[in-house]
Structures are given as C-alpha cells and as structure tokens.
Image 1: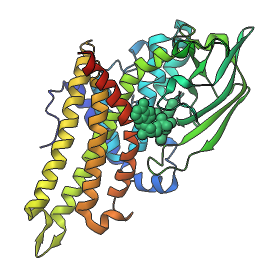
Image 2 (image 1 turned 120 degrees about the horizontal axis):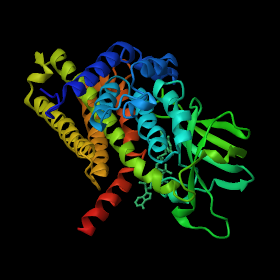
Image 3 (image 1 turned 90 degrees about the horizontal axis):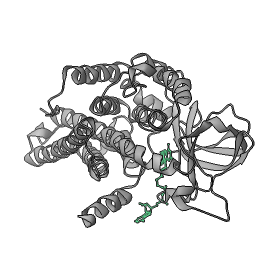
Image 4 (image 1 turned 30 degrees about the vertical axis):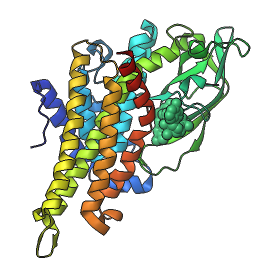
Amino acid sequence: MLDCLTPLTESQRAIRDLARDFARRELAPHAAAWDRAAQADPAIRAKLGELGFLGMTLPEEYGGQGLDMLSLLLAIEEIARADASTAILLSVHNSLPTRMILKFGSDAQKAEYLPRMASGELLGAFALSEPDAGSDASAVATQAVRSGDHWILNGTKAWVSNGNVADVILTLARTDAPDARRGSRGISAFVVTPDLPGFSVGKKEDKMGMRASPTVQLRFDDLRVPSGRLLGAEGDGFHYAMQSLESGRLGIAAQSVGIAHAALDHATAYARERRQFGKPLIEFQSMEFKLADMATRVHSARAILHATAGAIDRGEPVGAHAAMCKLVASEAAMWVTTQAIQVFGGYGYVTDYPVERLFRDAKVTEIYEGTSEIQRIVIGRAVAAG
Ligand SMILES: Cc1cc2nc3c(=O)[nH]c(=O)nc-3n(C[C@H](O)[C@H](O)[C@H](O)COP(=O)(O)OP(=O)(O)OC[C@H]3O[C@@H](n4cnc5c(N)ncnc54)[C@H](O)[C@@H]3O)c2cc1C
C-alpha cells in the first residue's frame, strides 16, 4: 500500500529492489548489535562498493553507475529502513565529497579519486563544521596559509561523520588573511587525506543515536596539503559546499523517510499481534487512526522528496524545495518514531524492540546538514522573495 506512487523506471525499480534485498539480508539482522557496540561491521563498506552503491551518480567513465538522483534516494531510503547508520555513510559519500570533486575538481583530481571512491576503495567524508561554526558555517576558523607548493592548515573540525575511517576528506578552510577577512568568499575547499603530516583524529563522540556511524573531531596541526589539492578556485569553497548541501539534504530526507517507514512497519506488525481487552490493538479505532496518521506522514514526505528529485533529474532548479524535503521528512521521522514507541507501550521503551533505536536515530535528522530552524530560514527567505 505504501510503496511509492512515483512511476519508477525499470532501472530505478531494480536499484530499489537491490538495496532492499541487501538491507534485509546484510544490515537489518545486525543493526541492533552494531548500535549497542557503536561499531558497524567494517566489511559492509566493501559490499556497498561491490554493489555499486558508492558511485551511484558518478559517470561511468569514473567507474560510477551514472544513475539519477531518484535512484540514489531510493537506495538511501531502503538502506535506512534497515540501518540508518549505513544510510548516512551512503548519503555523505555520494552527495558531498564525490559530487564536489566531480563538479568542481580538476581532471587530475577526478582521475585520482573518483574511480577509487566509486569502488569503495576510498571512503569520502565532509568536514565543514567546527566547535564554534555550526549553523553559521561561514564562521569556520581553520586557517590555510600558502607556503611554496603547499597549503599549511591549522584548526579543528567537529562532527565529521566517518572522519576516522575516511580516506578523502573534503575540508573547508579559510584562505583569507586574518586581518582581511572576506566572509564566505574567504573560504576554500581542499582534498585532505589522513596520510598527510599534521593530520590526527581527535575525540570520538558518544552519541544518542546513529551510534554505528562514527562521528569525530579532526585536528590539523601544520597539516601540509599539496597545492594541487585545492578544489576549484580559491575563495569559492563555501559556495561549492552550499550547492552540494542541496543534494546532501535530499539524502538526509531519504534517510528520514526510511527511518519513518521502518517505524511504521514495526508498529503495524506489533499492533496486529499484541492483544489487550481481548482483541488485537489494531482493532481499536484510535490505534488505526494513529497508524493512518503515521502512514500519511511517511507517504507525504516521500512524495515531496520524489517530486524534487524528479525536478533535479530533469535539470530544473529546485530552490527551497530541497530544504522543504529535509524539513518535512526529518520532522515526519521524529513524529512517526515517537508514535511507534506509543504503539508498543512499555515494550517500545526498552531495547528488546527496534523502535527506541529508530527514535534515537531519527532525532539527528532534524540537526545535521542544517537544523530544522535553518531549513525554515531558507524556506522563509524564498517565500519572502516571492
Ligand atoms: C551525528 C552528527 C553528524 C554530523 N556530521 C557532520 C559532518 O559529516 N560534517 C560536518 O561538517 N558537520 C556534521 N555535523 C554537524 C552538523 O551539521 C551541525 O551540528 C549542525 O549544522 C548544527 O550546528 P551546531 O551543532 O553547532 O548547533 P548551533 O548552530 O549552535 O545551533 C544550536 C541551536 O540554535 C539554533 N540556531 C542557530 N542559528 C539560528 C538562527 N539564525 N535562527 C534560529 N535558530 C538558530 C539551531 O537551529 C539549534 O537549534 C554532524 C552533526 C551530528 C550531530
């Protein structure tokens, strides 16, 4: 009933089914254990690479699948239904570092990184946030200073998803002088790799949810980055990042729809099976209404997401719709997972059942890649501009 109404092509259906099958076999049985251990099986990354999930929208000339945005989002959604932590790896890798190198990198950078990123040999991460630069991302303080044929970077990056296991870290740093700041125009993008002298991994966050996805600080102490690692033009990095975050936000929206759909599935199955007052919970009309409201939110979020992906795939500008997708889907995920716990009653509150994990995983979708407040600012500005 709740399968998407979007008319999918044969190829899109095949990708969705491949992701669904992989997620059911390889992720769902282990997601609870990985959450408890705060560690996923490292072998999953290679399997994602083998199946082509790490180069989905990259052109075939770089070893990618050459697929459209909707295919990527269908895969992220299916993976998130089983394990949201694996979905964030997929979303960040495909939406940010690979996409930024493809769009803004030199031919040499594309040839050096993209084929190995598509195969899963190299995993990508994105380092924009800092301890004092979150929603106001243009406040980044990590400083890059040119020195001969290198840039020397000093600073701390915060909240880097997969930062401790990534091989290619798309990093934003200031290239304007401290006494001549140029705001967001003073920020450049660099391809940082962990083998560079001066690179170290700092604190690993002990998180509420998404626990199998490592989130770390990165420290750069006189990090020596060869000048050929500057991405695109000096001073344009922030602009590149903001453009790429548009697809990143769609990835988070897809992850949110997947989490919400999983919560709906679990709640429906439980309401059929659990009996009180002599009949299954699902036979109480208030329970049926609750499931109806949950299903409606899942379906509405998916509908705006697929419509926006379709516009991107037709090459049309989507403006504030990407922010709307993330806002609607992440708030749906939070609401639906909260209702799922209610359907389970006390059993929803303990770790024997998966809905408390889904609830914890859902929360961060309202925070990362721009909080709900920031999405409202983006949407509000578009409304005001008419
Ligand atoms: C698990 C996790 C993974 C992450 N992964 C990455 C990653 O891979 N790479 C990366 O670069 N970053 C990553 N982040 C960082 C994430 O993008 C930031 O946490 C987010 O942008 C919010 O920044 P902040 O935490 O500093 O909160 P703040 O910006 O300090 O915001 C605190 C509160 O104030 C509100 N607020 C701020 N400004 C305004 C305003 N103008 N109007 C109204 N309200 C406002 C916010 O909405 C929020 O509610 C990750 C974060 C988490 C938690």
